[in-house]
Structures are given as C-alpha cells and as structure tokens.
Length: 398
Image 1 (tube, helix red, strand yellow):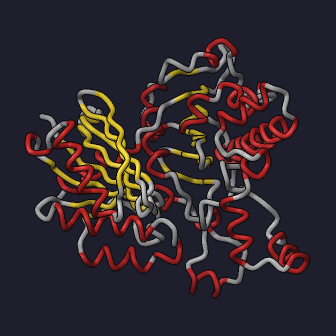
Image 2 (cartoon, rainbow, N blue to C red):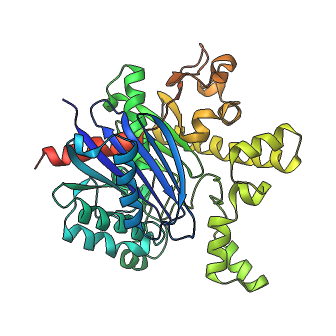
Image 3 (spheres, rainbow, N blue to C red):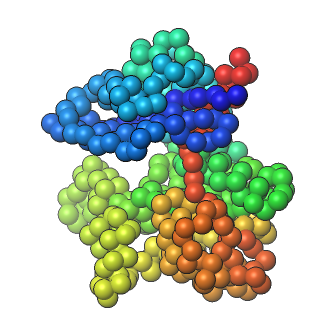
C-alpha cells in the first residue's frame, strides 16, 4: 500500500516541498519556491509531466504553500487523488529537548519558539511553515523532524565545551551537531551496502554541500560530529569558515572596530570558499582551478585538508572503520575532492580506486581500491524520504 507524506522544508526566504511515497522513497511531485518576500519570486515544480518554472510575487510563506498546492493541482499529481498520511516538517534546531521526531501540537510549537535564540535564522522560518501548514491542513497529523535529534547520542565528554559550567548551563552552550537527518539516512544505506546490521557498523559520514559536516557513527549512533553549537564549526563550507581561532573576533574588534554582528556576518556569509576564491559554488571553484587560478588551487587544498584532518581524528575516535561515506552535492559529484581528501591514507587501510572514483553516474557505489580494508561509499542523500519515514513512525505509534 502506498503511503504518502507531504514533506515541507521552510527556509527564511524559501519553501521546499515534496510528496513522498514513504515506502518506495520516490517523490510523485516536488518543488522549490525561492525569494519569498521579494518583488519577484521563483517557482519550480516537478510533476508527472516534467518540470515547470514560473516567476511571480510570493509575499509570505502562506502564499508560497498555496502556490505549491496550485502547482500540484495544475501540473500534478493532484492532492485530491491521494491520501496524505502525514505532513513532515524539517526543523533545524531541537536543542537538547528533542532526541526523536514528535507530533506537532501547541506545546511543541512553544518549545521550538523557546529555542529560536539557538537558531535565529532557521527556527523562525520552520515555525512559520508549520503554522501555515497546520492552518491549510487542519485534519492531517503534522510531525517535526529535527536536524539535531540524531546527534543527541553524543556522550557528555564530546558535547561539552570547556567554558564556565554555569554559563553553559544557563545558555545551553554545548555541541549539538546538524545534518542529522541526512547522516541517519546514508548510514542506513551504507549498512545495507556493506551487508551488515547497522548496529555492527562504524562509519565516517561526510556530508559535503554548501554546508559541510563530518560525523562518526558507531552502531547507528552519532558519537562525534564537526558542527557544534551552531553550523559554523568544523569543515570549510561554501560561505562559512569552519574552524578558526576563537581569538579572531576579539582581534578584529580591537584592530578594526568590528562589532559582533560584523564578525558573525563575515564568518557565516563571507568566508569559506567564497572568502578564499570569491565563489561559494564548488563547480565554479573547480572551473577556476582547472584554468590554473592560484586562489582556487589554494581553496581546494584547504577544503580537502580540513576533511582529511577530520577523517584522521574520527578514525582515532572509532578505533576502526568499516566505511567512509560521501554524500551531499559535492560529496556525490566531487571526484577530485574524494581522491584528494583521502590521499596518503593507504597505511590506514583507505585507498581510492581512480577509475571507480571517476564514475559519477552510478549511485550508490564503492570507489575503494581492491586492497582497501575500508569501503569508500558514495551515496545520494534523501532527507525527504528520511523525514517521511520518521513522520510515519510517529503517526503509526499514535
């Protein structure tokens, strides 16, 4: 029996939606509405007859969701012809309150609102999407699936920062981790590829996209992850710096008079690949590097070195590893990133096969060399399917 979940991911100025067959993992229809609140919004919808694009004013998230419903009615599939078993909402930050998906009610909404200071750019948009969807679908069960929930298994010595304890407790300062929904999905897929129960697998998952993170997964549980209190910490990303010396903000304040907001904007929006080479799109970085651009070459080396350093650290954390898993746009398609990030690790049992690694059309696949004792898996993430599956689990348990 086909069971459909409408998955909604509301961003600050965008709305991503997908009608997912939770059993098969396929999307009967999906879309993305961008530039909400700007004079000209962009509407993309993919239905049975292909992709349609349109430009129109989208003033609010409610307008966006109504446009999405119109797109389903006009371009298919019609929501009148399917039973929606649940509506799954991606929520970025669940703090230390949520370790699993939860049915949405007024109390949950209030709790997520209380966590807005931990994710001021994301949680308000997530809440707006929830509010609108609950109003338009009052009879459907709504489920919140939290990006941070998967990382609630981090042990205290991993999630604790060495800052004054009273300050940390009062302001909930700790490592939370993100990309949890993606990591949980590909970890399960990796176990199936390895032919082992997830409970017997030790994995390093590298989610590489405009945002990037590394996670050590032991027996299906997150035991270490690179993103921290916010998504800024860790790997080099599209516009985020990743790890920097914490003294940098103080120096910029003393030397240049920068405010906290100035530093925050620079580290989150103007750093990473954009800061190093002027572009946050990895495809543009690769084009410039191929043309011999020195800044692009350095940015690529910095990016891959940071990944390799985390792989080494997580090998130490896990003790032994069954597979390193690449996912996300760059992870799935970055042939040279995979090769460079894992170069020089053959003594640790990690070796990439050059020919297998060049094949970016086959998914999923193992690109490890025959002599490698550690699999190197390339798996396309499917967060929408994971949200749909988790949403149904909540509904079925009612």
